[in-house]
Length: 394
Image 1 (cartoon, rainbow, N blue to C red):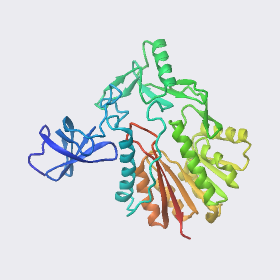
Image 2 (cartoon, rainbow, N blue to C red):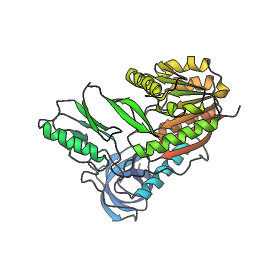
Image 3 (tube, rainbow, N blue to C red):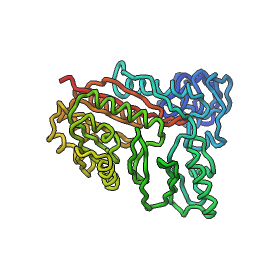
Image 4 (tube, rainbow, N blue to C red):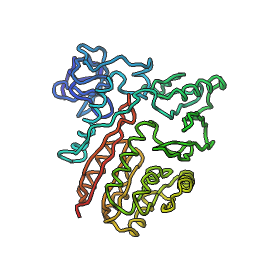
């Protein structure tokens, strides 16, 4: 450790890279320093705030030499609100950075020497795209701030759809006392451009549209927040399911069954596994409405139900679609797919570092990484959606 790298010291740093998560990366006497809201190619004065054995963190006090990719953030709360990390970066540069990050994560964490990563698919709307936001009490609904216990009370958000903002403004006007302590306000726009509010345990059912079909979705169940990119993602997944030539599709972490139902005409059988009882009920209603009868629902956690499902299908004719939460697949799920191999795996991930982790284990057990397609589901943020296709050589 260099003796001059101490908390509170200020150093002129050349930013060399943009790490997954959004921070610029520079070096002081060989030591990596992570600096949020900076851009590769910039030279900045950095005040050190954290020093660890292998790295340090700091914040930029002044930009000495700005990157041509730097732009003026739209939101006055940027760099204070925890929602966005990239508003200072023009959109083309955001796309380049995210694509490079997926590639680097697959190399560093996944152990894939030359990852087959396609060009990232951009969002047609880099602003006003989010169809859902969640704000927190007590008091006036607020976003979470970067600083400890900081709350960002606002009536507008440039990445939220206009319908959400109008609903938020109306809610604030009707509820001057705000939210009770430790309660959240969720707002979502449905297929009719109607905004719905939810507090606590209240349940609502919404209509969500994808590829010319409407699906029933419980308000608190998962559904992609960027409609335009969700369309691109769904179309891409359906195309890969069709190309696989598989007879059976296991839709694990199925939610309300959207992806499996959209691909129903390309397979003879769908087995949907989902632990959320409300989502399962909605999925059955969606299948009935679409006239799809060759789908079976298993209301269970994937790590508990997948083994029995794999034992009853012909692996050589089966594709498994994985769309787990942000933490990725449970180790038991991967263990079952390794013990009972399937023809191919479609792995949808909103956390490419966890995707890379799971690919490493599957790759070591005989699955081959055929392709990876990133999607910019969350412009202005450091989040990345990506889909990996893994196949078996046998």
